[in-house]
Image 1 (cartoon, rainbow, N blue to C red):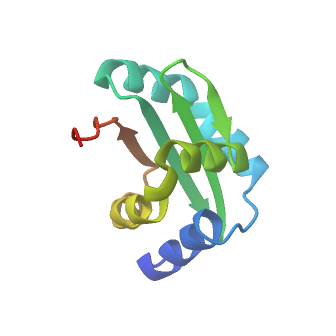
Image 2 (image 1 turned 90 degrees about the horizontal axis):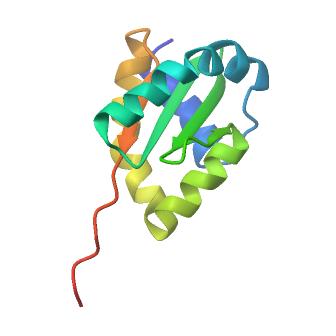
Length: 120
């Protein structure tokens, strides 16, 4: 898939509410979940996001620090809660990185770390 097509598929799922693929999540992301969870622990991140796109279908996995695994729409809802009002801006920052990874035939994976808000 072209980068443009990958980005469009991700935007449809992550910004416009297009349905995600349960089969793709189970077959690809849940198969790699233990490895991804180990990476989360090793890196010391607060959460880990993993995405895959095949034939215009998107699947998403989010693993939090407590090792809870959220799939597809539940993962999206959790990420929206985590990023709150910064969701769209943060997504625009990571989308090009996700597209590059996916275009190279890899899973798109990103660790998330919380940055304390500066004192008022």
